[in-house]
Length: 114
Length: 109
Image 1 (cartoon, each protein chain N blue to C red):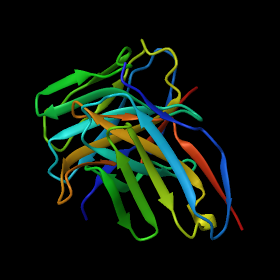
Image 2: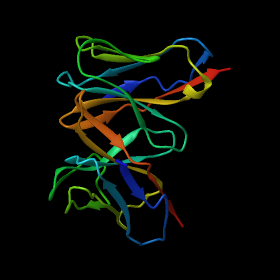
Image 3: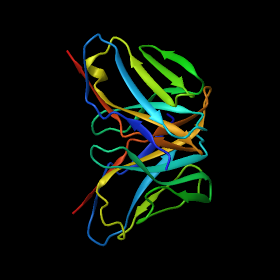
Image 4: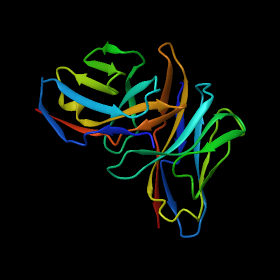
């Protein structure tokens, strides 16, 4: 069953704590992305990776970090430097289909601050 | 800053009508365009992609692209209450998708 998985579905962060969101894909896609969505807002790009061991900052990278050690995995760490982390976090991967390059999303992780 | 603009809505249509959703973009070199549907509390689901000028049909959905005017639209024929959702337009820009803020569609029974 091919697709993108994210865990956990809900995550609670305490003040000053770093938390890591998991994203795994078995679509054999090279490119992976992390977005943040706030209530009633569009998607904002945090980080993206087009190939293993390489990644670039998106529009709102401050307070976040990523790694890409394996093609299948692109974890996102929300650090204590991110002062307003409450949001819906979406991971996506992008690959070539019969129609062209296409991007698919995982189910998302909702992060809440205690 | 490259942008994608959508009317936030809500766009309200009666069941069975055609819903027309529009999107404009600023990056003239964009080659790939996407429509995603997002139900409340869920992740975006890809419903249409279009790569060349003209119309592309898939079931009740038709995507229309006009690169010269820099707009892309989505028509939903025979709208159903289950189509009520937020529709996100996305435009490819240097291997990243730039998203509009979405149009909320309400289909009245």
